[in-house]
Amino acid sequence: SQQGEEDPQALSIQEGENATMNCSYKTSINNLQWYRQNSGRGLVHLILIRSNEREKHSGRLRVTLDTSKKSSSLLITASRAADTASYFCAPTSNTGKLIFGQGTTLQVKP
Amino acid sequence: EAEVAQSPRYKITEKSQAVAFWCDPISGHATLYWYRQILGQGPELLVQFQDESVVDDSQLPKDRFSAERLKGVDSTLKIQPAELGDSAMYLCASSSSITDPWGGELFFGEGSRLTVL
Image 1 (cartoon, each protein chain N blue to C red):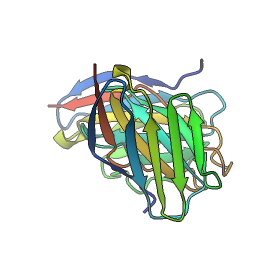
Image 2 (image 1 turned 180 degrees about the vertical axis):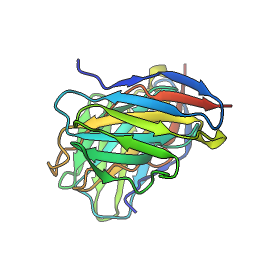
Image 3 (image 1 turned 60 degrees about the horizontal axis):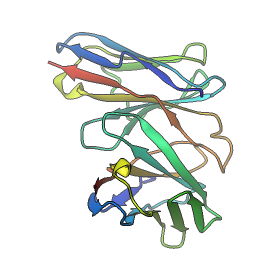
Image 4 (image 1 turned 45 degrees about the vertical axis):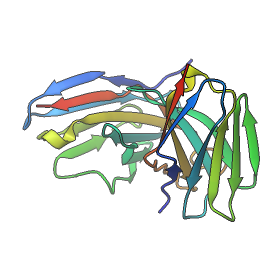
């Protein structure tokens, strides 16, 4: 299916450490997107990486994409307590249909 | 900054009652999505509109759920009758560029939290 599967399900780190989350998928994609969701709120788009890109940066975020392995990773460097949230990946085809997995719940301890 | 508006923010209802949620997407966004998110799980796509047409409603429980976007702008999601298992967050999102193979960023509203008693 087009659904992305995030790993690990839960991650707990200390403030200042790096956090790495992984996403695997099964179909061909046009791009892959990462979203963040704070508790009780809507999802917020973080970054989009196209299928012909291998790495992309945005502030403290670094995303990689390996289409041969059908996997992506999201790295948050120098994490802050405010980064505590759930993170979802969404592999996207040209239908515009985004199917989310269960997400990775990140807790950053002060 | 333009936002996706949703109402109500919270809704408590008794089972077998009817409930409706409203969404106003970002102006000019042709694609509108309704998702359902049960606590602790990821969002589940219920329906996707392109303008006023349904593109995908394969996961919409059509015996009790209905969705419309009559003029291709705002949208309403209705549940009748509500069941205990419908307790969830209902999220609306919009996008301007599903036809762009490199685009497709979704903008989400804050959601409508439904509790069915």
